[in-house]
Every structure is written in structure tokens, then in C-alpha cells.
Length: 307
Image 1 (cartoon, rainbow, N blue to C red):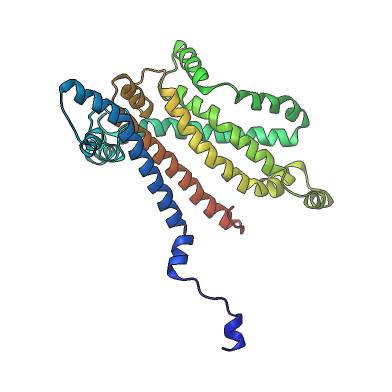
Image 2 (cartoon, rainbow, N blue to C red):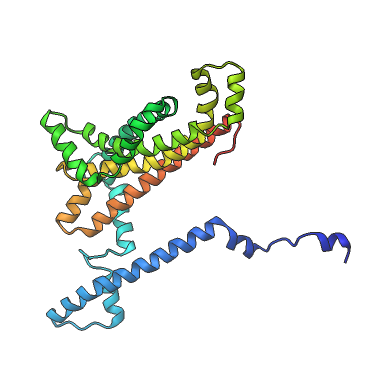
């Protein structure tokens, strides 16, 4: 064996590459979740099924009892395949212009979330610029911004909805305001950190050039804050979806994912309830992914590597 062969590192096998891949890690996590989910469905619904069989004088083996527990029409914990079938039917088979489609309800929620996210992002950027450049705003405003997030959104949403309804503001705007409330905070915190990220050497260099406050802001601080902004926007876009769903709960709305969650709770339609949850989760994940794609494009054009 030559010295070069001894020094060269061994190529990892296909199995080693598979075990180290991200796809395998995701597969293992999804498989573990499905196993736990099915186990919980059998355990929780099995007791109900056993009591029903006892009252009806029906005898089932353990296997038959488990199958019956996974096929209940209104289970306490719906099985994954029940949620998957309901989601497929309400997303791909139902008319998307009718209330039978979760695409219809998802769009109602998404429109409020996007408006709130846009307003929250603009508000967060403006507040961050003010806090970084005006010292009195940092001392006077930052504690209130942090304190605002200590108010539970479940308590705040009904108050906002009722007050705005009293002055005739209904529909999308109140829900968007709740989304704004949840999304502006991460943007503000992220932008403050990003605007302060330039080192003292770079700030001294701008002073050497006799740069004005505005020139330092737009030519140094803002470009340095872009990675922080996108990281905050990923949190904010997911929070805005949560805010839109929560805002639909106290309004008595008949459209939107929040309304579907409420109807599922009222009528014990657990499968429909979980299906709406799945659609809301997928929608938030897609929005985060879209922000990530925009980040790669913008940061790439700036000549940096996305975080």
C-alpha cells in the first residue's frame, strides 16, 4: 500500500451518507411522530370503543378493537390517515370557492395574516431605526415594546375586535391588527440588533468620511441588518398566521381557519378540527420557506451568504 493511499481518507459508504443526510433525519422524525400519534389514537379511542362494545354487548379481539378505534367517526384523537383523507378531500376535491374547501378558509386567514405581516414589518423597521438613532426612544419605547408582548393575545384579541366593531371597523382590518401585534416585535428586536451589528471600526470609518447620520444608516447599518431582518421575518410571518387564526375565534366568523377550529370544537368534529390545524401549519411553513427563498436572492445579490 502506497503512502498516498494510506493518507487518503476513506470514502463514506452509501449507507453512511444516507444515515447522515437531512432527508433521513426528517424521515425518522416523521416516522416517530406517526407511531406516537397512532399509539395515542388507539389508546384514547380504544377505551371509548371498549365501553361502546360493552354497552352494545359486542365482543372484539384486541386487534379488532384497535382497528375499530382508528375508524371512529368522531374520535377523541383522530388517526393520521383520517386527518390525511379529510385534508385531501377538503383541499383538492372540494370547490375552492365554497365554504366546504379549506383552501377557501385558508385564503381568508392568509389575507389577514399577510396584511398584518406587512404592517408589522414596516412598523418594526421604523421603530428599530428610531430606537437605534434616538437614545431617548430606546429608553422610553423599548420597555413598552417588550411589555406589549406580555399581554396574552387570547385576552387582547376579543377587546380589539369588540372596540373596533363598536366604531364600525369589521372584517379583515381587526384580524390584521392582531397579526401586526404579534409580528412587529420580532422584527423590531431583530432590526435593532442588525442595525447595531456594524463594528466600531466601520462606524469610525464612516465618521472619517464625514458621513451624515442618514448616510451611515443607509450605506452601513441597513445593509448590515438585512440578514437579521430576514431571520426576524421568518418568525414574524409564522406569528402573523397564528394571530389571524386567534383573531377569528372571538368574531363569530364563518370563514377562516380559526372559524373552522371553533366549529370543530362546538360540534366535536375532531377530524375536521385537526385537518384545519394541518392546513394552517402547512401554510405557515410555506410562508417561512418563501421568506427564506427571498432571503437567499436578496442576500446573494448583496454578495453575502444567507445565514
